[in-house]
Amino acid sequence: MGHRQEPRVDLNWPATLCGVDEQGRSFLECVTIRNISGRGILLDARHCAAKVGDTVVLRCDKNHGRFQVVWLDHPQRSSCRIGLQHVLASPIFWGLDLPVAAPDPYYRARSATRRHTPRHLAQLAVEVRANSKAPIWSSTANVSEGGCFVHVLNGPPVFTRVDVAMWLGLAKVWAQGIVVKNTSGAGIGIKFLSMSESARQVVREAVEKARVVEDRRAARELKPGWNDAEPAYSDVKEVVGEQVSDYDQLVSG
Image (tube, rainbow, N blue to C red; front, side):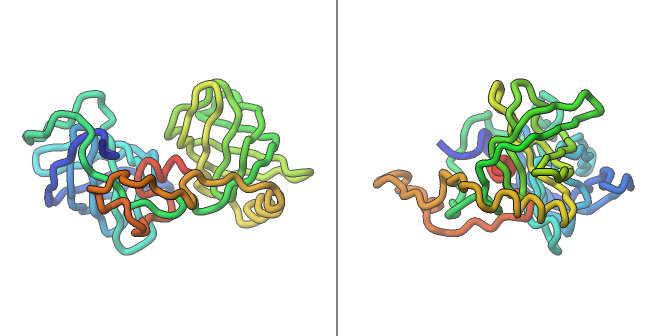
């Protein structure tokens, strides 16, 4: 069983992507559709003004649709890849004979670790604000420079933009983030999208002496015979962007 929930059809179609950037300005970019499935599309672009969680419009000839950006690969470089998910419950219908939804045989190359910054066990008082609703007061289970996991019974859904405040001793630091994981009854994983350098330094100093949470993927040996037919599970390192390369990378925080 592969890592994708639906088979994809390879394409090389020119298209345009439009939306609103983080400054509130509209943008229009020429992109190339690399592949498509019933629920998502992979794009190649010179750059991308959209952020993970944004809603954009993709137009290709007479076809168009509204999509959500679910991951970006190398968003700050001269070229990037963009993963889009259809915002409607119905599958994409652009005159293509798409395969029936089922896991495909695709396997990603694994890296030694999937996290950019180590997580530390740290119980910090935290305040989470989302969509102008009442703030959520709780504590963190673990914290890194890139995100945190917050104990909460019913948290905001995945891709919700949030403002996070953490108390580290007498210091209170703020960050803007996005919910990348929601485990009902346990908590939410938040990836920090922006944080001042001074706040990042406070977080770094506060957690550096705490015990590191081991990454389950790190130093794990594959079982003999596991996926022998798929060379993608070799020691090839996965090249990922600053934010995410796929949904698993997104939820890593």
